[in-house]
Structures are given as C-alpha cells and as structure tokens.
Image (cartoon, rainbow, N blue to C red; front, side):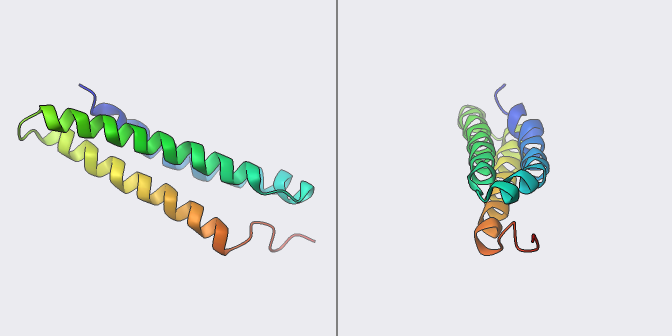
Amino acid sequence: MRAWPALILAPVFALAAQVISYALVTPACQHGKAWPIHLSFLIFFVLCVATTFAAWASLRTAHREFIPLAAVWSGIFFSALVLAQWVALFIVSPCMHSP
C-alpha cells in the first residue's frame, strides 16, 4: 500500500517546512541571502508532491477504497499548504523587521 506516506508524511513535511523556514530566517537575514529558505520550501514541496503521486498511483490500482482517496486529498492539501507558505515568502520579506 503506497497511500500511507501521503496520509502521514505529507503533514509532517508541511510542519517541517514551517519549522525549518523559521529556523533559517535569522541566519538568512544575517547573511543577506534568502535562498536557503527558498531551497527548504522547494525540497518539502517536492516531497509532498512525491507522496501525493504515490498515493495517486495507489488510488488508480484500488477500486473505490477510502484510504487511497483520503491520502490523495491529504497530499494535495498539504502540497498546496507548503506552496502557499512559499508564495508568502515572495510577498513578505523574511528580513522585514531586521536592522
């Protein structure tokens, strides 16, 4: 069953993207480079999408089963969440309040 990563790991990846981006703000602002934050969001977005595709493949082989369907929707939701967090980084500078 390839559906479980989208159910369990996609929310963990979304949370990890938020936590790691907060942890990277101070070093990024000290050095004046925001690329590590963007890189972390890219990595976690790719991981969320990969788990979603694995759940989608599991859904295609299953016939009307709930767990693969819930896994696909969970993966889509958390992939969109990581993408929304990443887009917010383009709109609001992480170093807006630093001296």
